[in-house]
Length: 213
Image 1: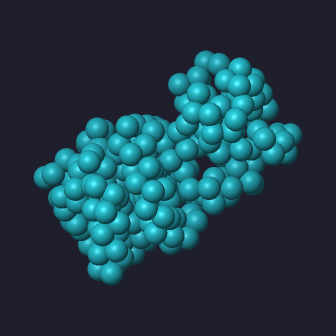
Image 2 (image 1 turned 90 degrees about the horizontal axis):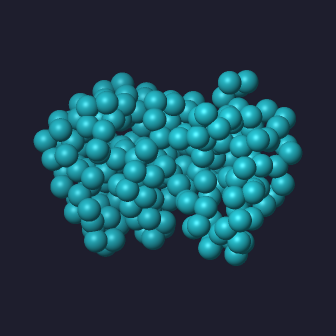
């Protein structure tokens, strides 16, 4: 798998590159600012671009804006945003224009090689990955309908946000696939996600509260 990584910290980039290479990935380019990552992604067209949200030149959301350009120009390139801290609004902005091949993780996850590599693989395969802490922030402040979800439903919702299919959720949670289907349907109903929006309902289940935020 071919990867471009962008972060203005030389030490972080070096550590991340080591992790990625140990996981069998090919880091085809590195970048230290938003303009540079756009140049490198356009030149190399990797499977996934890993981009820090806060980067030069402005040290605000330059990485996020670069990610938006990548997604618009090169939709086949997956984008994984990294952040030192949870930025709820950035997670919403990342997903509101499409949910395939995107992810948002906290930088602490980079040290968990298996988890980091799995996230990149899911994104390369057009899945959607949200850090559990980001998910907790996005869902936790949602409408009162979310309070109706029991602990098991919230576990299913977390798996949905990681891009898992019903079959995968059933396997991971030791449930029947029929039981998972019922829980997924109940989650959609509780959050008011109608069938006409089926294509994105699995991710909209995570973002449903944004209209009342």
